[in-house]
Amino acid sequence: MEILKIGITGTVGAGKTTFVRSISEIDVVNTDRVASDETALMKATTTVAFDFGRLTLNSGQILHLYGTPGQFRFNFMWDILMPKVHGYVFLVDTSRPQDFRASRRLLNYMKQKTQSPLIVGLTHADSHKAWKSEDIALTLGLSNFVTKPPIIEVNATNSHSVAQCLILLVEQLIQQGINVV
Ligand SMILES: Nc1nc2c(ncn2[C@@H]2O[C@H](COP(=O)(O)OP(=O)(O)OP(=O)(O)O)[C@@H](O)[C@H]2O)c(=O)[nH]1
Ligand SMILES: [Mg+2]
Image (cartoon, rainbow, N blue to C red):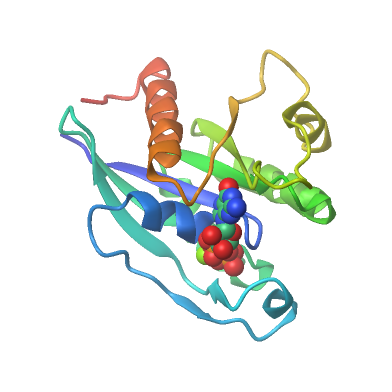
């Protein structure tokens, strides 16, 4: 049985590390360090290499979860991880419209690194500042109904919500003919 490598990516603070921590059945390999630049205005720490977690589905299928850094200065990690993933979750913080342009750029970057199936996960949908899914789809350039990936709300702090997102991604992999248990 092949282990599925799943990327968790998105801009700074989208919730990647939280997502992996919420669902991993092992202690997460974590490379968060104190944020020393403008990220410090948003949160105390930031991922400098990657997060690693593991999840075994009821079927026995093992997922390895790789959370990328969000900061552009660590983009070499995107280049290392993303070409290897079987599928990925692209997280967008719906409460930070100031980051939507960067999200769009990053999504296009990731699409150049991998053709693998993706899910767009909308975090912070519980915030009163959250934008609607349709509006975010437009700002990300995902308006073509034929080609756009599934876009769902996901609360990275909630293991049930994270599990639903990963199950949807695994269904996408099966549809693409990837051999999943
Ligand atoms: N209320 C709420 N908080 C969330 C949600 N998703 C993530 N968070 C919070 O948002 C913050 C995100 O931080 P991280 O998980 O470190 O974000 P990251 O994407 O790994 O950030 P970098 O590694 O710096 O790129 C954490 O405080 C989470 O608890 C959500 O859906 N709702
Ligand atoms: Mg992180």
